[in-house]
Length: 229
Ligand code: ZID
Image (tube, rainbow, N blue to C red; front, side):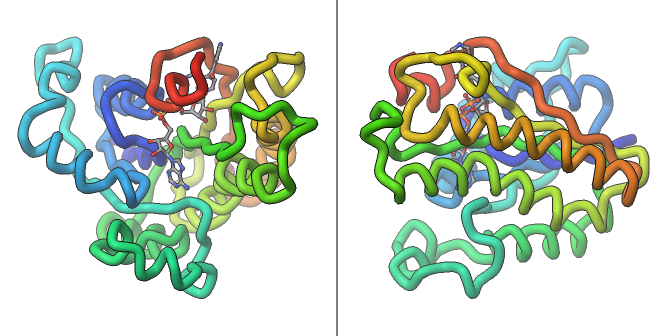
């Protein structure tokens, strides 16, 4: 069977969860990466059976998540983590959550993966029009929503089996004006789409791994509610 790593699952309402279920139904082993500040509540909800109904697969069995990894995709290695984050109560309880350390852990635990799913985004100023977006807000949106994909793919590629596949989720606001999708999020999705073409070329040639992005329809996830969509 195939092994999939899905980055960006912290509840049962988002695309990451739904994709994990589809992959599980198709017989894949499921590993997920959960944003560090959301890790405790996700793991305890899982343990307490809060998601059991949403875990039901078409054949009646429950989706098994083999392992939940803490992650923060805006940090590539420990040197990148600022002191205030490192010492933050919500982060201090977890370890190995930078992208490089995460991939080292997956390698140690499982050796390789076949499928990488990027289902995460964050834009702290998403509710501000682009004209009112600060430099920091813009760069944060691109760091969490676009570069996070380059970083994950770059670190996972050496342990991805040839013939493997990688996918991310985008939004049509990259191409058309959608008021309300501000803070540089439209720019972040445009970057993600352009990067998908370049990364497909590079990862395809070098590692025989496919790279695609899906322009998603509306889903009432936590992220979508947060921006009032
Ligand atoms: P979600 O909240 O379930 O997933 C986002 C995840 O990212 C959460 O689990 C966060 O904890 C995690 N996260 C945030 N920052 C970090 C970080 N630094 N490190 C690690 N994890 C982090 O929401 P979702 O399922 O909506 O989002 C998944 C992907 O789908 C994102 O790339 C979205 O941009 C994309 N997407 C979602 C929708 C939607 O409707 N939910 C749309 C398009 C793309 C969309 O907005 N019409 C209107 C709106 C839309 C489509 C059509």
